[in-house]
Image 1: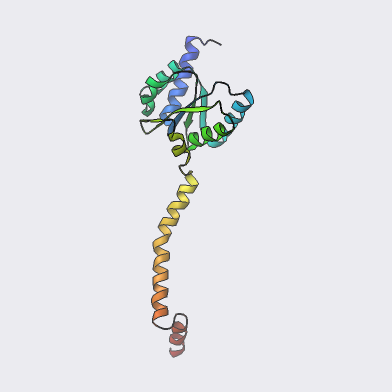
Image 2: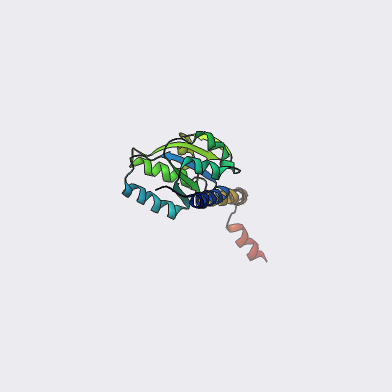
Length: 175
């Protein structure tokens, strides 16, 4: 279905707004993907905070102009599916990687993160990035480690000085 000029402008404006907010972009070849596979991918994308869109490359290149994804303009060829990560940088990579496991027709073509154009093989690297919850738990563990190390050292010193639990009890009895 051909789009008229105002429809094309709406698509470009919508995609430009998404590209301005997105953390990463994964473009993949989708030719041969069935409707049910595409529907399942779209459902997963909505649940994981990924904006998934099939759009003409000329419209996509106009939409990414002026954003950090402008580096992909020259390599957009063939029918491509665009996945923009809106909440977590690795979400689009996980989506495409997981969908490609069950669909040999879906092939990642390019990855763009922080204004850099990366080859398709970097989808695995992007997919392996921790989610927000995983990153926060890692941070909490790192922040808690010095306190637990200090507690172990204090306990070891107390045990070494010969008392551990008995020393406070003796001090209380003397008082």
